[in-house]
Image (tube, rainbow, N blue to C red; front, side, top):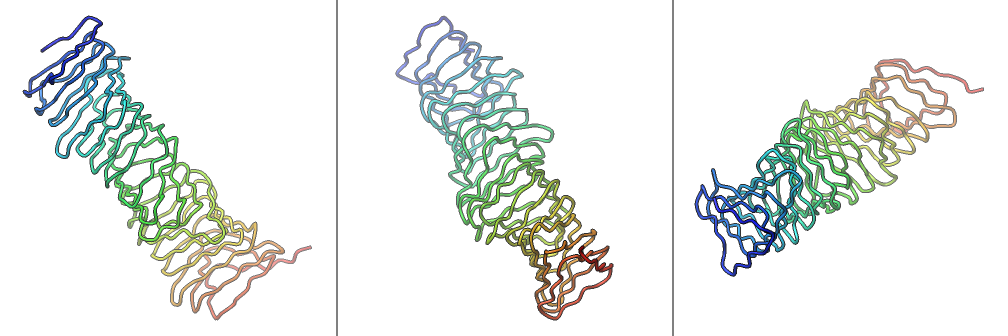
Length: 381
């Protein structure tokens, strides 16, 4: 191990190189080192930060292990890259901080194996993987330059407080079984944006500001979104037997749509979905729990589907069921006085499993079937 101490500056014009898997460099008081290179794949070796220190230029052609002591700060002044097939691992048990003065381009793997913080600058996801196995924090801006993955281990939380993360015309995969606690939106900002929930348990904020065309949210494992903003149009593909839970209330606005096209999946509401636009059930799917609040909205059914959420009518509703398809309604609901529920489509079936109380208007615009359950007619006074 080489130790640099004192409080001065090591102004080296040539690299101080960790060139062996066992190479170790300890910065124990030195305030600044100008040039450091990690050319080997470190195994037992590491860069240890015992006191606050700055490295002006870091060359990272190998794989590094960095151990930052509790409450200590390592600042990397200039931009650098973790190349494809290489890694940087933050190790140890302390709460250290890695400060970026510029941009870290992640083409390889960045591992949080310690409860550390990454702050300032930009972490550019360039086809690489961010692996988090301890509770960790990132306040640097995340930039998505090429399709990448963020993996947060089961029962662990990655707290992100940087600027909104735009997916772009790319695919971002969240996996691992943990929580991505983002205080700013994870945004479908392009019509081709794809977000894969491939094991992530929970994401704090997701937004659909544009109208997706080839983009979609793919849910292959159970997942929860705390806050969903839906000013654009979404496509959500929930795999058979899997559940996507939306914790807070949201609105599908007038002239906007949410398309469910995953066969056998379940969209579970813990609050209210206000429907002024269209909920399009393209494949066999279920809307479960919470409340579906109609305010001029349309449920368009192109495959046998089920709604077990509570139903309210602040405004009119339309059920558009394709020929030969069945929409099963499991809950009691009421069409209030002065409200209208329209049944459109052609030869579809609205299957009541409980009671539809009609105080307002039920309009059949084309031949169709109202099946099972009870239609209770009331007179408004």
